[in-house]
Image (cartoon, rainbow, N blue to C red; front, side):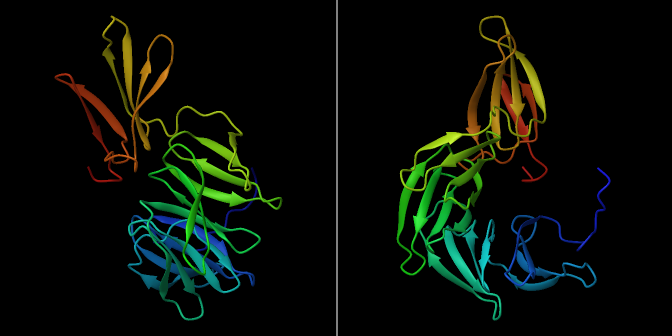
Length: 247
């Protein structure tokens, strides 16, 4: 609790994914409240240096050597960037909304499609992708352990899954249910009980007021739901609003 906190960069709303290269240089992106790639001074002595802009939402990326590989959220592509001569090169296409990409030990790229819930294995040389497994939609990020196990996070569930890299078999390693519970409204249920309608940031959910049972109505990214943050009821309808999505 007493560890010092050092600010490395300021004025970068929406700063999201980050990684070090092998030499300790730090890179980060803004993917939603902005769209740019930066090099950040790990000592915090100099301002962040913008390298690229308007890439299409470079999200959860990984650097190997001086090559950055990651997903373009708004374009449905995987891309790579040579950090010594920054430019975007598309290496695979055909994703609905790719959320993250990480390398396996053999050089293959693992990538998530948050809309479909697919974990795909991609050959970066050919761009050919195969589906390793399917999880529920609203996948956010992944990490590859030294033994090859793939850990995948689901932002709508608050759950991390362990995925077998050979078989695609998967299991949750923690319990979830809700993600980022925000605004809620209580209404009378059809059988006289109470139903809570919850804006859960990455999902719109109802909760039985007596049993606590949770029901998914819609998930962000897998539907036209826009990151709900507050909820209200009127005339038999539910109003969801989001300052993040501006809707």
